[in-house]
Image (cartoon, rainbow, N blue to C red):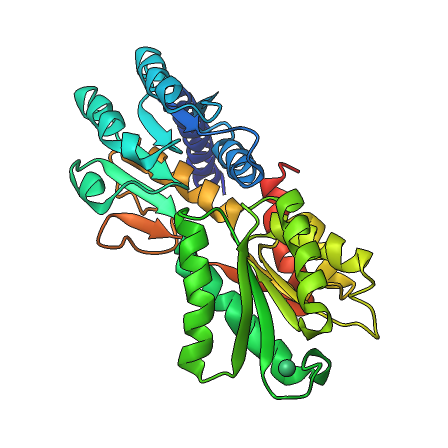
Length: 346
Ligand code: CA
């Protein structure tokens, strides 16, 4: 018995020593990552920021800076964080056109760089070996919202108010020229067409991704189309909130005046509207997974390991990792709540 217990206690001591040394080693080698944000006031990017901080925990030092939507300021901030000895850059560019300038600064300092949320061009991405991107495929969110509309229209006869078998609908478009606004708006129409679904687009107007603008647009639509409106598909949830406010004010979204509303983002305030049946659903942009992947890929790059270590998914032909959108309706609200639990930093 004694001969067996002695080596065991040696083992325990060795394991303990090993753990202590590993702890010290990892602490000493903690990467410092410069995270440059285009604008702290943007809600969605704030969820990504919180996720990066949450996931980093004690494994890295995060230097985060707000460019306040000023590209010139952000370029200076790249110099600032490099001079503070960061090991990697994670950049949410104010303008994708500034990517070559930022890439050159990273290259000169031999630093890996992970762009996110606003995509540089493929050419810029391929110009530097230590450059990656984390984002989404905007077209998919439009396609998924369109699929949600078709499913709701088929499942519930209340949406076909004039009983003609055709969906009369409106698109609340984001800021014209913004890649998300263009891709989502086209995707909705193409998805209906490809499915052979009978849909009549009454109008497209821009709400500039803003609640107040979308409310004004919807007010005007109600005056112009009234009960002809069977569904509104919004390019984002901020505009959905404006549409809901307008519709409610005119007595819609009630049992005798139904109107389908579908958004994109699945923001926490919209989840409660999905739960109580005010809106059909929304397409979740998974801010938590985006933040997690941004941090993990930056960390891996610093450690000199495969950037996809511990990451779900593959890189596309421009070294971009696309985080999938998740359709959220009454059946899977807890899934979205789980994402926000982390993204809200709770
Ligand atoms: Ca109809």
